[in-house]
Amino acid sequence: MNHPKQVPVCGEEQVGVRAALPGPGRLAKEQPPLARFLLRVSWAGPPRRSTASPVYEQLLRSSDDFVWQVDVMSHGRFTIDVEFLDLRISTNNATEPSSSIWPNEGMVQSVASKSTLGCLSRMLTESIHADVTINTTDGVLKAHKSVLAACSPVFESMFVHDLREKESSTVDISDMCVESCSALLGFVYGTIRQEQFWKHRLSLLAAANKYGVADLKSCCEESLLEDISSGNVLERLHVAWLYQLEKLKKGCLTYLFVFGKIYDVRDEIGGFFHHADRELTLEMFQEVLSVWKPI
Image (cartoon, rainbow, N blue to C red; front, side, top):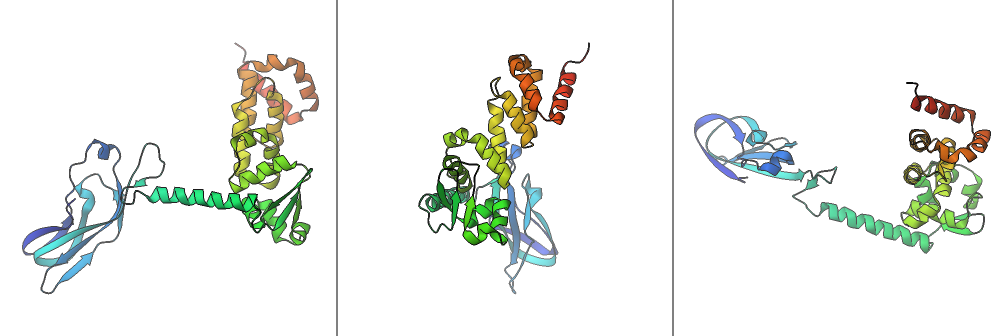
């Protein structure tokens, strides 16, 4: 890119500004850069004058993408400046274009995220300015009202309205042990370990549904989908129905009827139907009809 470019002009004429763009290579053709730029034209004078274009944001495929009509009469020599405000190139592994002008932009965000997680981890593990006590079935944990409220509309309601939790700064979670509640706080504060998540998936799912932590609920559903087996499919199906997990429910029904695993659980199916919701039983029957169509 010529920057700046001096172009001699003879006589007075209306100026059309065009910056020279080299012929695009194969990569530029497949992934043309997205640029934010403005064009600036200045005349040496006398008197010295200049004018600037609006800020453009567009894909750069050819020189035609740098055209700007300047409605002034001019003579003599003038200079064209192309000022890039940003230049981004999409990559196959990234949904957002990456900046080629500020290549460390993503690194700064990554460092900032890690630093924030480190701070949150210390806040939790060292109870730094903790202002709420959580009572579980077998132990007590400390946390922060602001963090809990930010992740859960239920916790936010507890601490905003004149409820007991607000006045006493205490939350009773009587359906979780201290270990599974620690996993819940680990997810909220971004410090949960994979093995911790796997061990407490069902408890975390129940808590996510109860307290409205949508991201955790989605993670639990995706995880439970990954290891459906004959030994747990009926339990997973019940869980899917209980917490309105459509993907998990569909996965269980497919496992049972499309893959023919219903025969592997025939000893348990009677007890399952005895306690299953009527609508769930109807869905299972409809799934049977859709798979075993008459020839």
